[in-house]
Length: 85
Image (cartoon, rainbow, N blue to C red; front, top):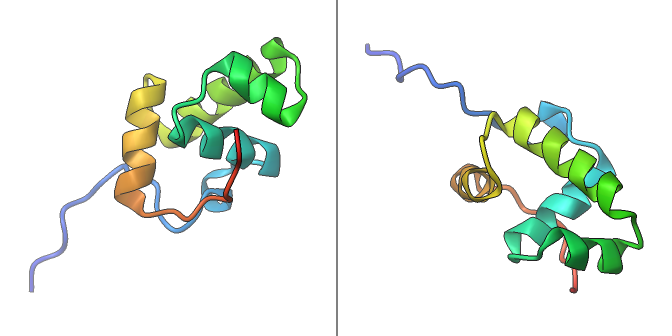
């Protein structure tokens, strides 16, 4: 029996890769194509705070940019909270 190919992709859930609740909220808005400034308005955060969350998200997903992170989340099939914005 063959083993499935090894992958460095995170699985299971956002929390399993170390994302905080606030990072999950930021990620949900990123998935909707929101800019950092728009995320600031929706979550009532300062822009440097949003940038820090985005950096943490990219690191947790082993992504080099927002687009790659969004694609990885889609591939993983994670269900993120519905965020209006």
